[in-house]
Image: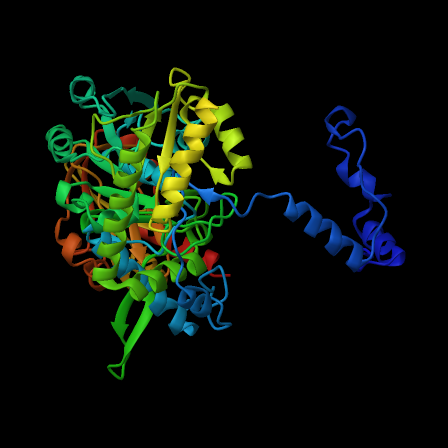
Length: 446
Length: 129
């Protein structure tokens, strides 16, 4: 394909002349030769047809038709076609809330409905208009707790997604924050170890439900203990599980975040996904991002406005509440269409199916010789199994049989060499679950 | 533009009234008008230590959230709790009912860094051009 650089040589010369620079290369003088790439491997231009064929060949290398028993934070859920239809409408099809937001009443109303849905789901008082993904949302919650408490110590459960913990640590590398990881005991938060760490310097305790190992827990006792010390409690939750489990609001959590991918967003190499965040009303002004509010105009008609953006980056510059200034309006729209399509009963049914199918899979897998399903804590739709062989090899061999068999835990927990996470969503049929168990048995023992 | 002659001012548009060791602080008539309708005042904590010309509070209006700087150093003794529910007092009565905090101060030297009413009026006139 031809290049799309619109400037002619004469344009370039004129512009360089205007700023008194001899060549384009001179603009990059500050980058020393050592820091520059040795060579650019840029092939000759190709026709559109050739490029299309090349991209399609690359895409064909993806294993897109595996039967998925892998989760670890993102899950293979059914997406009703109304979600694609609504979010694909040109009136909505932008990833952003517009910069003249009040001109776009439809977008604002959709975001308002999304916020309301997140509040109902989490049982919290207010939700923002969305963030990038579950991991960055959790980071934002942690920073928010620092702002509220003025404290600098953070306790984080080791069963919080290691991906999220990595995000938090890399975002805060140059900040003065003391992190302490709380060990896991029998798959759940070690209460005694945590209680020893609660002190007057601690800003927040970060928990996840279900945790990375799939275990569900009622954290109400931990939240109460934290509050006695003026410590905020933050939960990262899996939204689908909220159709069945005690809500984080009922447990008393102060800030709730999560990955919204399961609400109508396809699995897609890490994104774009959807971070949601909800909190108590008293913390509204410490919350990052924006909130859409409902109001009435001078004629008494209902209208929607951005009510909380005065602390964002384009207004507050370096003093903004957060670097995250935009939201994921299109992803949030998909989530609210998804939730509306299912309705309350449909959503509860979805949660029930996830739970029950995972229990069926547990029963089948535990019958395989050498396979142990960890039973120390109840789980939702994901659980931990111990295999008699290296899970990395097992997962590799299962791909040839058409299955993404699970997530080998050793990648993030080096002492869990024989452990693997298995996820089962409502999409898995009885036949697929039985087929998976047979394939796993054959892989292990033949 | 109301600029009471008995107060001291900063170039960031705060005013201060020092009585004994206690400095009452607020924002000027000019500042409240420039900010527009004030929707929220984030007050400092009682007992907080503040430094002259460093952030004391945040005022949020329909346009922006702005830092309010301390005209004097000291310890916050009292805050205007009415502003929590009636932030509009800052608009209606910037020099009386809309005061923000009272700071216990000991350093009289610092007052020399502030403007008197005439100098503040001149500063406003100059900045307008």
